[in-house]
Image (cartoon, rainbow, N blue to C red; front, side, top):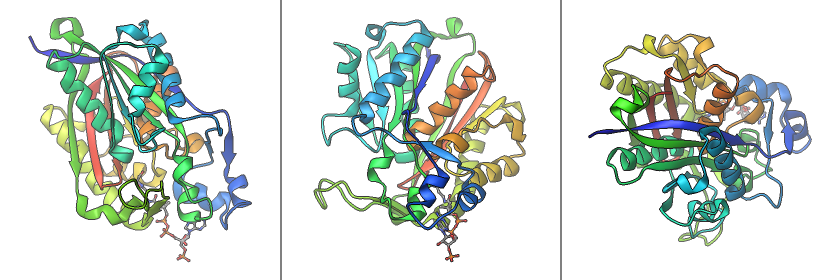
Length: 323
Ligand code: UT7
């Protein structure tokens, strides 16, 4: 019988250290006003020297397990979306598995930069709906601050660190009662690598490198591609955009989010936004925002939620789920 992948709980973690726009203005030629007006960001969290991506991911995973009322050993699949792994190998997912004390099941990372959580959720959903695995931790976790050039004002003001996690459980359709991931849409256009990339890597420079972005070119691509992905999942599900309860976007830029809201005729009060306090946390931003919406009581079981992401690659995508 077909299985649905139901979100049983979500959790998040943000490093304690906060960096304000004012602090950034002492480091590079920028201002609080410019950052707020162009992006909507006021501050972001930055991982401490001893905090690795796997630490953030494990903390978010523990919170998600607590919300789901499950033990770590109920999990038989861990998928971590990250661009900032602890090590070149093994995967951050393997390290998270050990930190959680899980001794069986599968664990691997997914790399689709800021679209990573959509790719990871879609992948985990396939593993659960096929019956191969029963319960998955899907985590978006980043220490993006580690790959920023802190002298480049065009990138260092945009990003932050954090992690968010979902516990997904395979349930029979009768048990799921309409809940679960409904569908997803994943895309990549590798011809656009140069718009957003890191100028280092194992096979090229044997170094980590720093983020390089042609921001205004990415911006110009964003609203149309994101809207098209959202329209695709909505059409495929046979519903109307107006049926959506909540829109949980990747938090790259408030102006991109507003553009999508306008284009698709959504209401601003349907948007779950965390950008002001967190900046762009890449693969972590969607689960962080989703968890914020659950924590403050906006997203309730049974609500229809549309999520989307876009990032380096270029990659982009969307998914529809009933909370
Ligand atoms: O999550 C992955 C996907 N990433 C995105 O979706 C990011 C997409 N891009 C953006 O969000 C925006 O393009 C940015 C926020 C990065 C930049 O905003 P913009 O309105 O596109 O500005 P711009 O790049 O066209 O730059 C406008 C001006 C330039 O100065 P001139 O050439 O007009 O004199 C920049 O040098 O703003 C300048 N500038 C800054 N000024 C103060 C760029 N960065 C800064 C800064 N502070 N931090």
